[in-house]
Length: 609
Ligand code: M6R
Image (cartoon, rainbow, N blue to C red):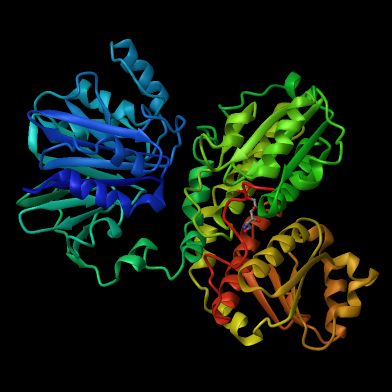
């Protein structure tokens, strides 16, 4: 996720660009840049770090000109650095481009362009767009952009400027947001409404495949075929703060709703072209490498640790390698048995968690090979690990982790499949079947999110005032742990998760009339066993809300309510069954009037011990 802005009019472009970017930093903040048409040239200023660093860089020498584009970055291809920051230009500085998304075929395009003599400065996928534009340009800016769009694959919101056309910007989008703000004698481009709301409330929301030519006195929108599109003006009625949250009341809810896209982006480029297998180009593992390990450790904290528990299940079950999972604060001090035949996988949304980083350093010192799963390119953990695979969830602002968790599960599942393929532990037909199911996840998550009313009602109805228990077996148990943590951290309600079979070894004593129990029953191999445990708590008059796959007609006979999620392969169920748990926590916290995005005593990134 990145933020894009553009300006064309009579005022100073840089002022709007910087102001607009400051409202989009929630979309990315590892580097920022602007390009302004100044004295017959495109002047680009960019800097690693937050927008403040860019402001400092151009203090007293602001670009002067009334046409420009800007960008605040959340790195995907290439670490955060001055050169990797956007805008990107072609060889001669004739074009500048800003991009949000991923150009999936950039490597092959880059090779072609290099062979034709283009010189690249950055490691980004975006720079190919600028060079491609230079390559195909023959005097018609719009035609050249259209040709570029024909050649690139992937997701994007793009804004272009050309030295030869100082009166216009071009922008277009596919699977990433882009809006045009309509002013008087000036127009604006932005990834999101907060960037323009101080200048105008009248907007066009660009659709996929639409291309807009934006001049100060007019906007022409055409579709993929070049046909004129008549856009309806969308009048923004929210205030600036609400706009930043995309109309959602809290970042947490917004991030819950971003999960279909986050999951899709995380899968992108890791499924082979024939859609039958998994490939991690960034790892390039082989059987010798995998066979050199006799054990894998997964080490993390909090939600990331819970993702690790699911990861263990996936890797052991699919790739048949022994996996131990540990919380980083324990692992680092317990003299772990780690050596050259250990693979250590650390998981961290922020990539900055101090205990996880320390565990990583300690394991490296003992000779382990290390792999990081993180959401932040260029973070300390990403830099320290031997190898890294990124979750492409985009910035997570709410303290409670949601989309980072689901993307971590997706990544673990893909990693386990990848390992199983390499080790020959899985039949290709079974992999293909699972890859097919994997690709269904975004639409299945959207389906769950399309009707949250029953979940809202449960959260209100039961109030969840004192103790809530979460139970499940196997993967359902791992998800229960995450559900309980979510409830605790944002609603301050005491919640505990138990392996359902453990109840009778003590905790059953706490189950009395009216105690809420959330029972997950999505795993067929332990289904009957879980059902017995549910009957045990029901017999003590607990109020039981079951989570089950659509088509399950049994569970409803034994519980008070069932929340159904789409049916899929049991491996994939955790990625779906956690969504109602996130929503339950969210609405319970709302009911209790808690500060959802900034819960008491907690910080987003725990960089101290
Ligand atoms: O950035 P990390 O994933 O390393 O953070 C780890 C935990 O601090 C984090 O998951 C925490 O548990 C979340 N607040 C849970 O929602």
